[in-house]
Length: 600
Image (cartoon, rainbow, N blue to C red; front, side, top):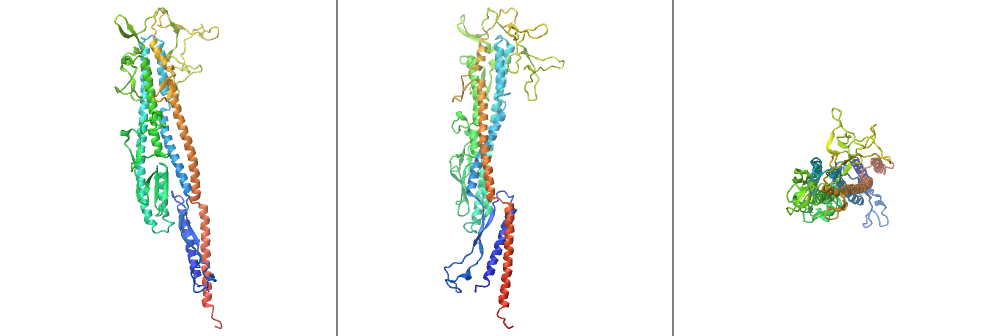
């Protein structure tokens, strides 16, 4: 006979296992909404009898009495898939990188949003219009010349404003990067302390098991750390974790130490540079740290020491600077500033410094004498010197089309000009119902064309020529009836022609060749294309991350339906084992009290 109480011991372990499984199921359900919690399970194995020993109550050929020892447990394990974890951390770093880049580029877009509408395009167009108007007047027309100079002032102010706002964006993200570096360093310190706790707790567990809740806490840290850059993770035999970023071990579980990340002083170096505590540069292929460096240091074709070729804040600052410098250089040269410095139309607000969008301004010489650009250089034979003055008078009357005088206009809710059905601006009227005209300016239609004055019939309609087209009114260039006097204004016409030059090179790195207006469109398109590219990358990464999260949840997440079924199964298991103990008890009672009593 087998030992009588062996069956009781088997069922005792079975009851304990059923109870432990119920405990773990209850623990899973309790933590169904706990961030980072990993579903747990009891690892069970069937006990067996070794044939290496020779129990006294059996022979080698009869081990039957030792069979049926029931089940036991190795320990409580977590259900995780390291491959899914690895892929998730790879893709979440891309998602974080692209989100950061989109945020930076969106802030740049907010500044340059009106680049091709009411911003730089409009101010450049206004300057172009003013020069055109001036070119069709006498060069000594002070009123029209002043309008041209004021248009140049407005253009400079717009460039100054762009530069100031881009600097604010730059400062914002430099400080944000500093804050993120400090946060990661603090997180690494907490991970090191957690490693110390894990090592102490692991001492009380079998080799394959450990403090699951501490592992969950560590994995939460690792997941968050993965958003800053590509990382690789290794779990040591003592339960602690090693984490490597950019080829450097930033968390060492065996040595119980971590490596801090250090940011160089931006105000000193002018670039966002990170390095590890061991002196090695932080070089990453993805993650938000890479995004900050790409966007702060990204200077496109203008990249110098410490910068990179991405189209970031530095590039768009350079692009605006190049526009300001190129406009200033081409117009200054066209106006003769290379020979005589007082002929400069644009100068730097800081003497002896390179013209940028931040310091460009209209020269004092031009502001003091708006007709300065209408004067030409000529050789005075009497003095033997080159002098500047207005063009010589012409003996032949010169006529031109007479244009309608401009007036103040009604505007739409978005600030744009309101036009009527004929494409003409709707005039604004004063309190007396009179149109408010603008002296020295000419009216333009919806397509930015000057509006001529047409000859009228008796009924007020336009006179038409043989082709059915309205006949414009002509006037002499000087505005007099005789038309015997005319100043040619050749220099302003030459300046005006610079806007049609499609061979202007912007930037010393051959970034673009074309006209002023084409360059504005080029920069606007480059910004839009960069945002579109990063948005596409982000959307792809988001889809992948969401799929991996679903896969991770299906493996590691707590499923209420599944745990409910487990609860019922373990409850049945417990009840069945309890009944088995009752049956064994009845059998034992029969053995003790019901045998050997024949005849009693």
